[in-house]
Length: 277
Image 1 (tube, rainbow, N blue to C red):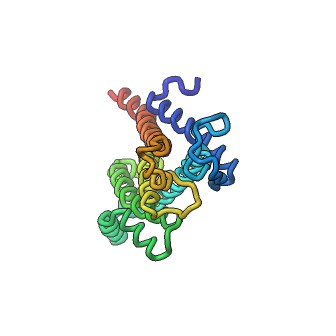
Image 2 (tube, helix red, strand yellow):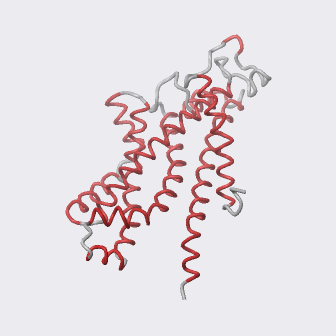
Image 3 (cartoon, rainbow, N blue to C red):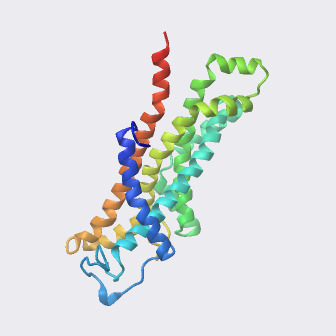
């Protein structure tokens, strides 16, 4: 009943994410966020009741290791997107109001877009070593410029409307107008962008970990799992397929979720346009 009338992409994305993240959360709680126990005599074991997906080269339960890594990857991506969204939204609203501060924000944004996340992560790793903190900072610094631009464009489309001019004539300052009128109207755009940014953040996190720029072992991670299992792509391809498919499901789920949220949030605006004479 709750999902009746909801966009199909929203339902499909929710189902994919629920089917992946719920067992990932249970695995993370069961193992306390750490990798499963190493059991060398039992390595490369085939799927069984005890090990539904078999074991890896260290004898660890493959399902538990990948699910725990999926939780860690998603948590890092989620935290990075939240930070980038909050910081980028604030700076984007400052840039939309113009002035010297707006010019400074947009100039810094153009400069930030010139640095790829791999380069930022490499500099952070050189400065403080491979860690989840450096990985989060790299993704945040990469996501802030795009968030600033989207926020600025959305806010400027609201600031030119007549009721904004009326609010200013009534004595409301820039901060009051932004909080009371601009931010609530651009919130749907920010929500959709945040949900789709999660897909990119997961890819970025997995890529950085794959290159050894993420949290060091033994912290489970999908990117590190792909890097450590890739040498078995011909003799044990299932080892590579499981974390690879997990990354694909997470990215696809968040992309579908973003598409569904966009369709869902656009419906009120479409209904209002239909009522116009």
